[in-house]
Amino acid sequence: MRLGRPHVNKNGMATITATEKTGKPVHIPLNKYPRLLAALAAGPVGELTFISGANGRPIKKGRLGDRFRAAARAAGVPGSAHGLRKTRATLATHAGASNAELEALMGWKPGSRMAELYTRSRDEALLAERLGDKMLADDRTNGVDSIPAPHQRCGRQGENPNENNAIFIVPLYGEYILSYSDCRECHGAHLHGGVPGQLGPIGPDLNVVKDWTRAGFIATMRTGKDPYGHELSQQMPWRPIGTMSDDELSAIYEYLTRMPEVETAATN
Image (cartoon, rainbow, N blue to C red):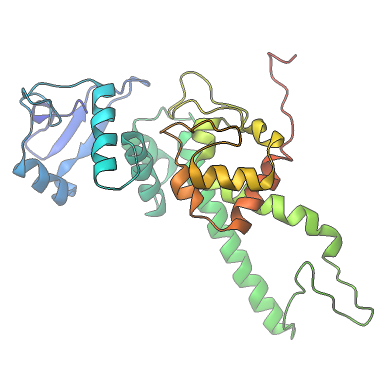
């Protein structure tokens, strides 16, 4: 938001002196983003900053967020300015960015573990896929045709070896979904509520879901209203979450209602 012509050198590299929260310089190679350059050339842009008000002067962050949400609603596209930042980090992660590259791109402090929130989910998915390929190759080598589903009876005694573990499969799947959905960026590392100073908006303690029914949780993600009729925050991306299947939302619900308690200095 504070980026403008004065920050761009002759080689197309823009440098913002410091980010608002970390005080860390951020370097942006504008020459690598031809679509952005085309948009800036088409204008209109401000004198000191590219994003400006009608008078050509810089605007405050809150005002930009309001204007962005209003434009998104008018276009029928749910979203927020903060969501764009998260999308940028997600796209870079899936393009193969390392932790150090993400920290440089986003202005995060080295060792802050913000980058790890993105790369860990990506790496776990890649590792799981790689292991699946190994297991499939092993099954083919040993002549195994299939693995019984949790509720599928099979074998000489009609017993399913996975049935006793079925209750654990759904919550684990829910935990996996949450691992790549960036929920912890707002709701805290343990989903017990955000803390002041974090990058994302401060989300509430998700232990509240333990008082809801499964149907109530699914309805909340589909309507944006909790079981008590309260509207969710505009910063909560419930619309894309609501597009998940009932099975996926049920898995998330099962995990949230079984979340382990985490002792904190306050509780001690």
